[in-house]
Image (cartoon, one colour):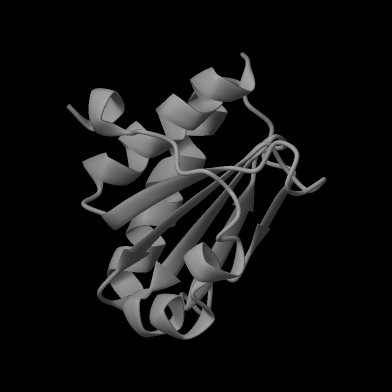
Length: 117
């Protein structure tokens, strides 16, 4: 599965669990870490965990390896590393505090309208 298909799968999974304000950044040429960052948030610890759990289940069902999953128990900032796609599931307050969109402001935003319908 290519990185754009993984991105689409991840975004749909996040949307299915009602993740809020889903943003995808094209990190190609900006960072060596990944080709895409996906950023979203939930409004409670339980919602953050539900979003992360759903993403984990969906990608594993597709045979995609999760290279790293961090922060699940604390449910404040869950990082799910899918290789070329890194997903950040924040608790709302942490998202505002860390403001990754501003930190990586030189990365172009990926249009998700077609993915989220």
